[in-house]
Every structure is written in C-alpha cells, then in structure tokens.
Amino acid sequence: MIEVTDLRRVYGGGFEAVRGIDFSVRRGEVFALLGTNGAGKTSTVELLEGLAAPAGGRVRVLGHDPHTERAAVRPRTGVMLQEGGFPSELTVAETTRMWAGCVSGARPAGEALERVGLSGKAHTRVKQLSGGERRRLDLALALLGEPEVLFLDEPTTGLDAEGRRATWDLVRELRDGGTTVLLTTHYLEEAESLADRLAILHRGRIAATGTPAEVTATQPSRISFELPEGYFVGDLPPLGELGVGGHETDGRTVRLRTRELQRAATALLVWADRAGVELRGLDVRSASLEEAFLQIAEHASGTAAAGATETVTATATAMESEGYAA
Amino acid sequence: MNETEAPGRPAGTGTRGTGTRGTRGTTGSAGTGPRASAGTGRAAASTSLGRIGALARAELTLLGRSKGTLVAALFVPLVLPLSVRSAATKMDLAEAGLSVGTVVLPAAVGFSLLFAVYSALVGVFVVRREELVLKRLRTGELRDAEIIAGSALPASLTGLAQCLLLTAACSLLLDLPAPPAPHLAVAGLLLGLVLCAALAAVTASHTRTGESAQVTPMPLMIVSMMGSGMFVPLELLPDRLASVCELLPLTPVLTLVRAGWTGALPAGETLAALATAVAWTALAVFAVRRWFRWEPRR
Image (cartoon, rainbow over all chains, first blue to last red):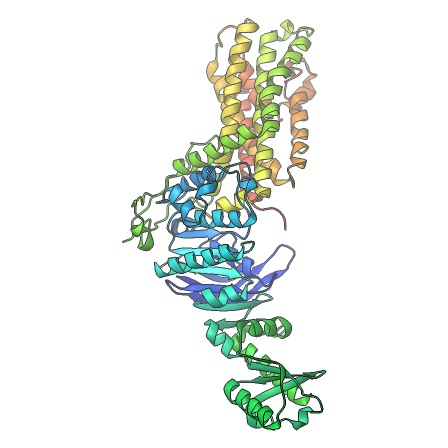
C-alpha cells in the first residue's frame, strides 16, 4: 500500500530532514514512525501525503506518486495533520459539512462526529474546542471518506488518557476493517500497543525497524538493586556465569544487563537467599521499546545508520563491553 | 472494482482560473474496500463544482462572522464615491466628454473591487494560510485552483453585487442614461473581479501575518486610486503621465466600465485596454502558480 525507497527531503535552507529512508507498509497494517521531535517524522509523512515533492528517492501510495498523481490517490486516503487546519470561527458541524463536500463518498456528518465522541459539540466554534477535541475533529474528518490508507500525524498529542484509549480503540477497529494506517508518535507506549510494525527515526534516518517485539529483542533486560551493607560487587557470584552481559554501579546501586533474564535473576536471588541478605530496591524488568528508543537517541547519532536494527545491536553490544570494563 | 473517475475541471466556474496545476483527469478508484461497508452506501465521487461550492459556502459563513472585513468591504465603497462626486462637480469635465456620472460610476466600481474584493481577499488568503487551513485543504481531493477559487468566490460575488447596486444607485441619483455599450462595462467588471482576486493571492504570498495583511494591500490600492482614474479621470492628466497610468492594472478595468456609458472608446483603445487587463491577469495567475505560499514559513 505504501512503498518508500531511498526517500530524501531537503528544506530551503539546505537542512536535510529526511536522509534516505526505506520502508513499506502492507494492506491492513498499522505502521508507526517513532522518533523524538525533529527526527523527521512529519517531514516524512508530508511526503507520503503528497504535500511536497521529495528531494530524492521514490514514494508510492496505492501504486501512485502521491505528489504528481494527487487525483488518483486523494479520494482513497485520509489525512490528519499534526495541528490545526480549521477556520476558528466555523462550528464543528459547519467544518464537517464543508469537508464532506470535498470528499468522495463522504459518510453522514453526524455519524462521523459520533464516532469520535463529538456529537455534543456540533454547534461549538472550533476556537472554543479543547486541544483534544480538535484532534478528534481532525480524526473524524480524516475518516469521512472511509479511506483505504490513513495518515495520522501524532493523533493523540494533547489528548487525555481516556481520549487516547478511545483513539487507540478506533485505530484498531479501522485496522480490523482493512484500513492501512501510518501514524507518527513520540509516545512509545502508543507505538508498542498499536503498531504491527514500526520504524524508529533518528535524525532523518531509520535507526531500527521491525515489529515492536523485534526491535525490543535487540535490547537486554535489566536487573537493579542496592548492594547490602558490607558487600562489594566482587562478592556477587561471577556475573558471566549468570548470563549477565554487563553491569554498572552507581553508589550502592548495581545495574545488570542480561539477555537471559530468568537465569540471571534466579541465580541472584538464590545467592541473596543463601547469603541471608536483603536486596533493597530490587527491580527486574524485561527489555522495552523505551530502552531501544533511548539508546538510539543517545548513541546512534552521526553513524551511517542505514543498516537498521544492526545499529541498535551494535550500540547495545558497545554498552555491554563498556559495562564490563567499568 | 476500480471505477473510472473523471474529475470535472475547475473550468470557468469560479471568479478566476489560476491555472490547472494538478488537474489532470486521472483514473482513480472511488469506492473499494472499507468504503463499500458504509451503511448509507454513498460512494459518489466528489466533483470540482461540488468542492468549490462546499468551500465557498464555508467562506461565506466566515465572511459573515468577520465584522472588520465586512465594514471595510461593504461600507467604505458606498461612502467613497460621495467624495469623488463632490470633487467631480468642481472639475472641467465637459471638455473631456465626461459627466459627473461617468466619473463617479467607474470610481465606485473601482472602490468596490479594491475594498470588497482585493483587500478582503488578501486577508482571507493570509489568515487561512496562517491557520493551516490551506495546508489542510491540500491534503484532500481539492485541487490548488479549486482552493483559490472557492476561497475567493464569496468576496468576489459580494463585490459583484456591490458593483451592481452602485451602478443602479449612480444611474438613479446622477441621471446617467442607459449605457450605450454595456458589453464593455460587463467585460471590464468581470476582468476586474478575476484580476483583483488573482492580485490578492499574489499580495498574500508576500504577506506574513494577518496584521500585515492590513498594510500590504495599501500600495496597489493607493496607486490605483491615484493613477487608474478613480479620483481623477486620466483624460484630465498630462498626456505623458496618462500614458503611463494606462498601464496600471486597474486602469483598463475602469476605462472599459466608463466606456460602457460614454460609448466613446475607439476599437483600437478597447483592444488595448482588454489586452492590458488580460496581460495583468495572466501575469498574476503565473505569479500565483509560481510563488503562492500554502503554508506558513517555518
């Protein structure tokens, strides 16, 4: 449904916002572009939406170039911009009616508003809506034409927890109905829970891509605890034999990284039990997307990171050996 | 289940045709997959006219809610002709083959074009751009020319209605006879509407904020009022100055409107006026296609 090859975008001042990215999104899939602010998410989505021409590379949406073949693509796509885009003095109903007049096969306005829980606000002016209500209005309009491909640029920014859940449910419902969804987000939780596949963007390049589980799997799990009084790191059982790949200490706090969480945790707890000591602040956690994300943000800069997941792996390995040295 | 869609062209529907960027009739599918499951089953493809109409309707609502624009657009063009009239009664018009009526009426049309159409539309384009409305509209099925046409339609129709009203008022109050060459006046008025909408889009391209949209239309407005025969008919200016003023964008519009009532424009001059107006319009359309900004500067 969406094919992106060696895509580049350069702004007027020479700033290269998108530096040669590749990915594809299959029919009925939710694909998330994850990244910090300035990573190139919106710049990328705007190219997919056809709002701008790429500086290099190729985009195909539904088999067409979204920029030069607008008439072929637009009736089949729905777009939610990152912000705004509605005259502040129109009411919600007027805005919906206007947009419906510009969409092929538009659903009835009332139904569209009900879908996002805005029925009660039909006669409210857009300027009086809260940020979250505006996001929901934007979503309602993006869905008016029952699009086959939906672009959502930070769909839940500014929403409260309840609104966010409602939007997630709606996106899942759409996906189950066969809609292809490409969304950007800086909420890891959102990418983790919604996306079938994702790409982590960093400085205009894809630093990691795959299913949330695949991206997470490149990261070690973590165990942290406080050393009991009178004990030193050297008093612990040999870490290598526990399956621990690296460790660091911060005062009395010890942090271990491992790819064999159960084995390492068991060995540690058995040791503590036998030694008769209490491990305060014990925290055992599986690898998370958050760690993958943070590591990329911290360490993947400057590298020619076209090699996708390799970078993460390499970074993680580097961290581990660093840990050993410490 | 691909249906062939033949999108209508924006044709001469709006008050203007800013080129046809992106208006290729492309084959697309209008109703596949999820859409077929829509309960009401309305899978009709949107049409160019329908889209312009929907946008124009929303813009008309917005015009009605914009008090400042309304006052400037509706009130000022009704008042300014009065001052032209008092000035015109002191001019030596008979020698130039003019009367108070044939001075005041074209001036009134000019004021209407400048205030109700040109100046108002600069504000509309700039505010919509800064509110990201234009960007949002460009994500949909609307073509660029349709967005401009739909946005410009309400103000242009307001200007048209105002011109007709002012014409009727001038005819009644200033004893103007029926125009001997109405086709010239009609041509002038229509060209003027299209030209002013296009020039507004050009001006908006060089205007950053809604506040500066109050100022950036001023140069063209002042030059037009002084040099296009609104306050002083070109016939009363020195020849050399007059021949320069003939090249200003609104001069041919006013010349044609005036000629509708005097009926005294030789064929060569009529053609020259038409050519000048068309050239300005073409230039403005070119500039819009080339430089119009659809998004705020980053």
